Amino acid sequence: MREIGKPHPRLPLPAEGREDDPQRFLAWLGEAIPLVEHLGIREMRRDGQRLVWQLALAPSLNDKGTGFGGALTAQTTLLGWCWTTLWLRRRGLARDVVVAKATQRFLAPVTGDYRLECEPEEEGGPERLAEQLAEKGRGRIALVQRLWCGEVLCLESRGNYAVLASPS
Image 1 (cartoon, rainbow, N blue to C red):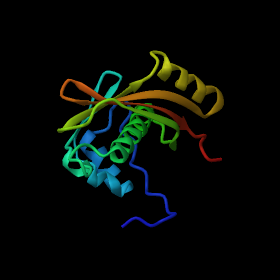
Image 2 (image 1 turned 120 degrees about the vertical axis):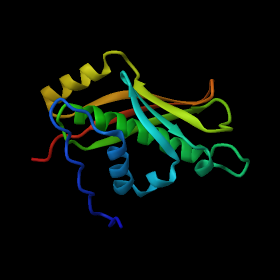
Image 3 (image 1 turned 30 degrees about the vertical axis):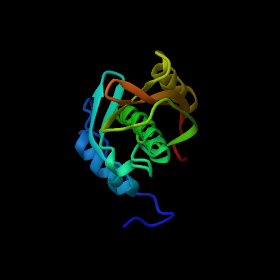
Image 4 (image 1 turned 180 degrees about the vertical axis):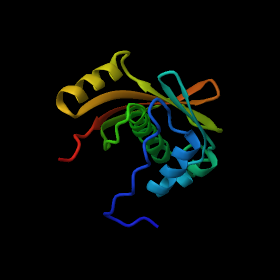
């Protein structure tokens, strides 16, 4: 059981040149953030610069039988946090990431299981983040998350994620 005010231990970084095992990362994430167990995440995979989750709708139903906006917003925010954290981990960096700003645009009701995709908002975003980290020890990246129910775009979210400086 997590304790309020006590950070959860970090997941050890993957071996140099390796990526995180998605199932191991999701298991750790469920321990670190108890809400994750209730989000209906079925699968996590990378597709180039894109991080993709497959999700079940049932845990996020609202009173109308469609996706609850608050749950969907939490998922988009967390997916951006995961994108940034995994990007850092591939570079051997264990750093704190926080969402600094997020906006959502709901376009259509979510009526079935769905996928969430997250990628940099701008093509050179990851390179700029790497430069900021090298120069200042901290940085930000703008990410976009899209929720697809079949071929229907139901939600588009944008987030600005800050990578904090290492504690001295």
